[in-house]
Image (cartoon, rainbow, N blue to C red; front, side):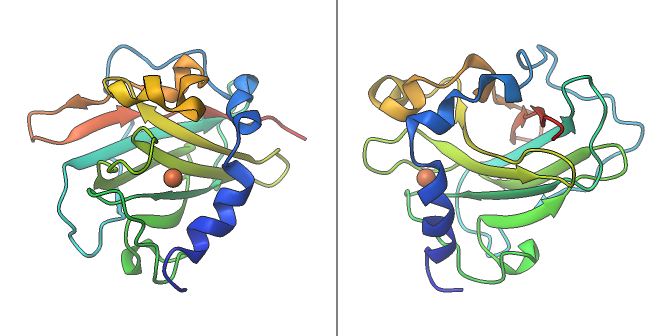
Length: 190
Ligand SMILES: [Fe+2]
């Protein structure tokens, strides 16, 4: 896939405040404790197959229904800019190990997912952000953006500024030097 085309295709559907106001689709807020009690260690999907420079960042989370039922095999598409704010989404989007800073992954049997990538850079007036698109059989799909709590650019980004608190993630540095955050999402049933 050519440079940025995947990003642009998906962005057409997400580039608007309307899409930022899907409040009911999200958990009330992130847990204060930045660790999840998984029954076994999750293997992460590495979105930075080309080892581009940047701050290593790990996102984990679960996909739920509103009544807290887990959603296994939910498709999560994630894409974001590199450390200097450029999109490098060439490669096969459906095989994250072959792409750069983008990919399609699935939740496991317990509805969980985990990715490793780098912190997105900034471009234009935008705050740092991840693009997410989540879909699962029998559920409404969701396309949205995730932000960093300590990013002062949220105040000058009209799209980020109206994001609900639950989409502004409190990424913290781990002992390993990674930025780590939890992104849980409610996906309503059809
Ligand atoms: Fe973007």
